[in-house]
Image 1: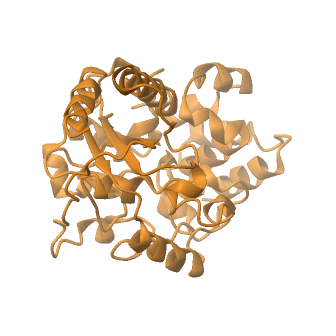
Image 2: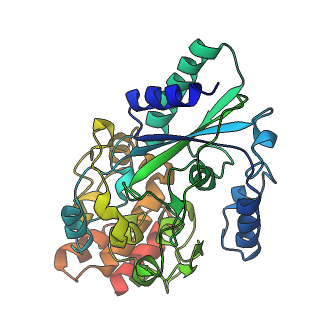
Length: 343
């Protein structure tokens, strides 16, 4: 069993993960932080953050007999910082969080985790396990921090000293009593760049994000109307927000992904807002097939882009494009289109 962790790490690297670590299941400190965050109402209407009770912070309640957790990370960045910032600074281009440009990461990582679990099974025989990729009540960042994959930064993302923060996380809960790795230590120091850059000031204190203000929440999780006071602050961000990662000095060490599945599809890394707004629902479904973007649905897609068009410099083309949607069957879309026209 003492040799198994090193074998697991080697098998993981062969499957395309950049790093693998092992932790125990003691998440008491993370549980206290989570309870405080929930008590402040920072989860907005994401009821799933509390409805599972303590399963999120007590792994054995989610998967019986879990005593060790194998944590993995996989790089996803497909382009350097310069073209990313070029798109973000172009008010008529739709900015999409870099993690969502290619194939849905849930599918990519889960398949690899399953292969890793089967490889372990070949070595040690049948054992209890369950693989997760942001798909159940799992405190993945706290687990990864304990497993030595990085530390949770002031923006609440995981940061790795040698790889920045542009990576996905996944876990295998296991009944195997594996030796654990050394937890990561925090290296944010006095830096407050992510707090200062946040367009909506959603990072209300170091390590605390108020989802009610966060652009990622507003464009992805929020199903209803986006608060009018926040719309002008969203700029051209139509799916998620990467500002806190772009400004983080540790991301100068980020590595570009070698996974072709994460390459941008349909020019989504630099597509014109009007082009995206003119997609029919059929086009939206076809062009987001196998993508994380599809989960927000067509109405939210149009809602988000309408806000971005309202924030763009006025032009006859944008006005005409918005006017074409003033009688859209969705009241949600209509509301945001009319707001955009007033801008």
